[in-house]
Length: 111
Image (cartoon, rainbow, N blue to C red; front, side, top):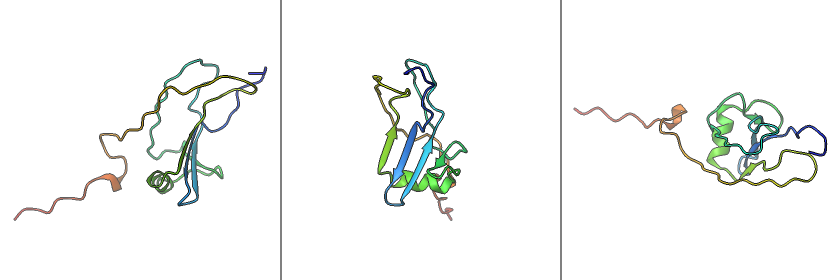
């Protein structure tokens, strides 16, 4: 740690080159913890921020996820030299829809 506090930067960065949009999330990794398992809900929430620092809207998050170019995950936490690794990354879709646009259209009524 080079005798300094952990670097406070984004832990997860989602980039869409198509929409020229970057959405970020900080505060996921705990300081001074050797090993962690972190689950990140990709649903809209106030925790998601744009690169400008402004809150990301649900539309921003949906646009970046629909055309994801890069997924950046912070592997290191401290200043100076360290060894860090990420063992596994799993992406999965929740069993229940989070956004109204994810709900299937209503079926036509049978006559």
